[in-house]
Image (cartoon, rainbow over the protein chains, first blue to last red):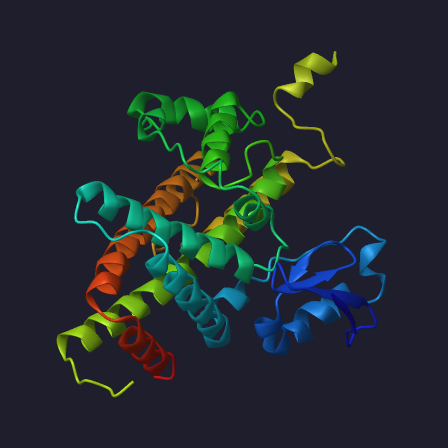
Length: 222
Length: 92
């Protein structure tokens, strides 16, 4: 482990195991993305960012930058290489399913890494991935027509139970956000949605590039 | 006394008013769903939450489909040609 003095005066420690910088606050920063994104995020944290309560404005634009997507794609490709190597390639359906699940998990982990540990959902993904496995689609019932008027009337009297129920459903969808208050939950949700959109864009680009390459096999000498 | 309020208000940190929550909610979700909702500027909170849930689910489904596609492609193509193609695509 070696210590590095960062531009904003704080110190970070490079750990080999996690392939990233762990700053004093315990958040994970990653070397690849530091060059293009550290400027804005370090400036935001500043010198006194650790003591006072941080008011993180939702900077969702970062999920739409080309740089972020490229960083994510690179990380994802590395992870996908590892996916290829470890599972024994059989021809059964279960293996296919397991492989696509491994791809999905690698993609989600890479996405959580790209979030640089600043959001709850990313930390939850990196620390276990146990929250997201059981998605019961039956528990989300479509809102019947009769209750919409009642819900709207009740909404004027303050937060009714229906709204809370929906908020709970939403909290279950996002990893690590089951017991959050509504404002925090909404911030997490917006960041999560922006990140998911980037994930979709990056994976589509990779899949298109792969299918283009495999359909036109110009044998590159390797 | 407090049990009456504890159901309708998660009093964890500070006095966050309902109005504030609703404002935040409509702002955040409208920001993300500007392509989907079209020009609904009076979406109720419940509808916003519901739309968000559906949207997240559809994104998850899309990611699952893409993972499946990627796993098939990764098997078919060689690793090195795959990497070459991906790096090429990153610079397009």
